[in-house]
Image (tube, rainbow, N blue to C red; front, top):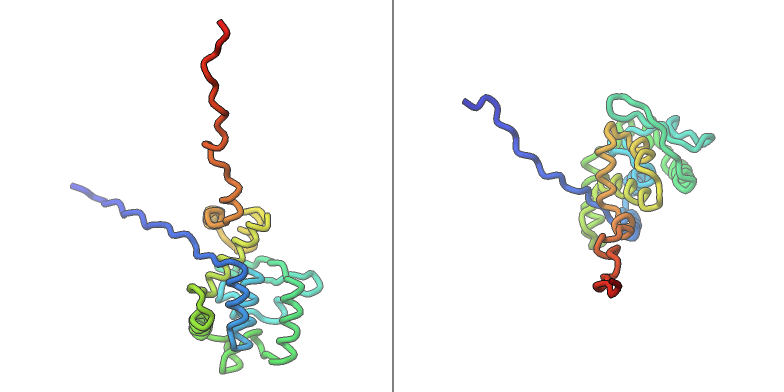
Length: 199
């Protein structure tokens, strides 16, 4: 009698990562001003889409140049505030005068809907002839591009709010910089030595 059947292992798929050039074209192609700023914020900070959509002005601390993020399980973490993002958010604020939420939806008292953002991403990818890019892809790109720039995995784990380092370690598999630095053991083999002539 078999009491418990082991589950088959689910294949672990590597996160989809796009190049900085593809990310730049994608962000440029998104037409809606509010949605464009949500996506620029996600790429600049690595926030989850739910965290970005519920962002409020008091969470942006320009004196310390950090964003206070309330993540999964109501855990707070700090992420660096890019000087460029700060300037863009200030210009955006002057233009749109958002209410309670930095990125309000049609009902100004509610945050923008995630499905609306996903639809805009699909449209931008189609218009620009790009492979699929979602808000979560931008989060992956944020982490991978940081890793390629030399930021260590532990720091990225803290920035992304990952509970386990193993989750963050997935990104080490997709960084081309890391892959290209690996030297095959074949290349390290010493030149072959012929039979010695000395007796």
